[in-house]
Length: 400
Image 1: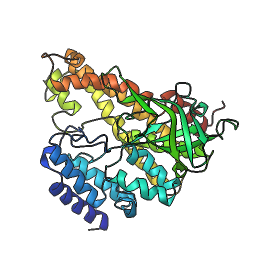
Image 2: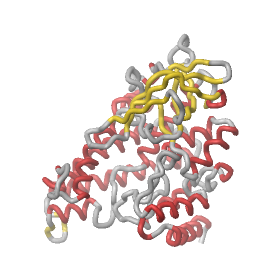
Image 3: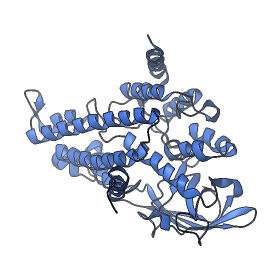
């Protein structure tokens, strides 16, 4: 038995003994997962078991498995981290914590942050104690992000931030924001930008949630009026934040694409089993041939997508430049998430169009809202149109 196989056995045994049975799910739901943070102490029921699962994962550094141990991680190699993910999925164990701090900000800080910043921010993220949000888009700077106008003024012993951000997911419950600001209005637009960290729990910060068509409000408008940011809150050089911001966007797109679009792939709530329940069966197969064909295409797409992601990861470990691949993966995952939502509604038929009432099961109502929510996948994290432009220019080499 090689070292990786031994690690798999040990990991499987640890998950079996550490993840409470009440949190395990064959549906792919993230029951038991917390977003972390002082203002978001939300645990799925039973909360006691969710907290226990988080605390056990924190002890081993498994919330941030590839981060160095000194910052709260487990120091795992990528192959070991892949095994951990596979075994958690196989046993139906939910991620103990999912947050922008883990997926986006943390990796960026490891690359660009000072030692002081890493020591201050990374361990609380890895313990699920701090929640982060992203301050990038503005009403006049969405797809053209470098046109942002939120001002950052030097006040001697601190910076003063004034402006507005929009589509700031989770800003209403976040403890901190990593924010792009205009620090040099006279410089070319890509060169006068800085990335700065803002404590959200202070005077001058005002947040207003934006309700989506699905009925939820994950997005917000955020207003800053003379908000204070410390001098040590700059990530990367002053006026040099655009390079840091682009790297963070790569991590964001990788995070979005790595979540996949299939949802549950086994158990009673996997799409094939749902199709049998709602569409009927013929010789043990889904009776509706069109639905059966769409299911097969979706599953093949998922296998191809996963294989391509793994191959790209291998290329990256070999030292090849695969940065633009994140745009390909983000585009593909976003568009297929919408297709999956449409397929689930087609499988459920009229039961997939419920909003409320006794005529629908909670699961059916959730699928309706998930379908509506999926329409935003091609906007958040960089629109599909922006990703296609990046792919055309930087991958295919097409002229402007």
